[in-house]
Image (cartoon, rainbow, N blue to C red; front, side, top):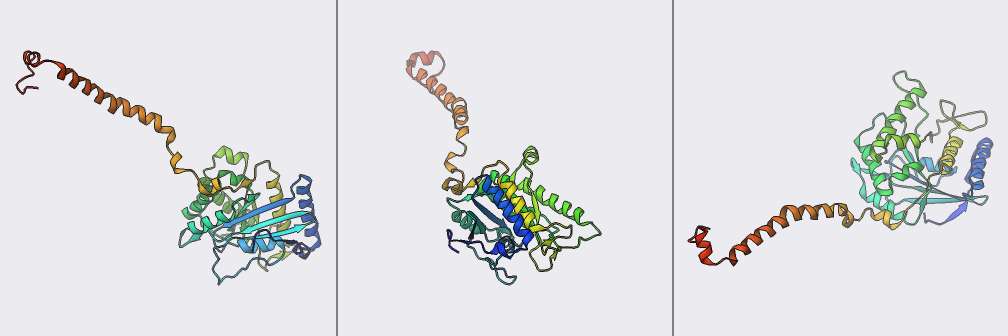
Length: 312
């Protein structure tokens, strides 16, 4: 879908009335703070529910979702307007291919985002994934290297497939706590977020269930096993991030290109030159002066010093 095509957000009318009321409340809160445009970047590994989450937020099927179809390499931005407010959601391809970070997909995403401002990063994973390994850390590192550590101050972790029965007799809250703590730890490691930084600005987590098995309450709203009405809760969390005082991320050419390799190590050049002088240049100059001094002495003087006849 071409970027810049803004359509009326009719999908919001598909939500139950209580959900519509809450969504309008949160969007109104943003407008009161002079936030009239919101751009959300959705990233993560493949098959975790990124596109399904985009469809759920908008209340319409804008992104193709198929268990038997591989993800394309092109990002897609969907833009919707409502009462003077514009919502942009950027759906992206999975960041893993063949057990490794897909650098090609990452480069395409970065180029697509040139001159765009990211207000919120949604990092998507599954609640029912019980394993977190070094590949997850590499994905987080790749995102951080591409957009800077500051992106996580605008970050939100979304865990899909949240309508589940926890294994091993764990309660729902206990299972969610263990899963989220494990994932947040790997994010802190991959993004190199220090403990104090994390305590000052913790990354929020929202639970999502995009499938039809999600239960509903009396008002027809989708609820999770812990009773959370998850669509309004997700939008509220997004609103809180936008208003948390941190800066949005503007993707310019400098950010895409990354650090200039010609600038690396420049801070050490004076030290290297000093070491070269004391341990290389200075000894050589000293030897040269000695040789010059010897060459200026007449042969008879060198003979008297015992340095003639091949003895020197």
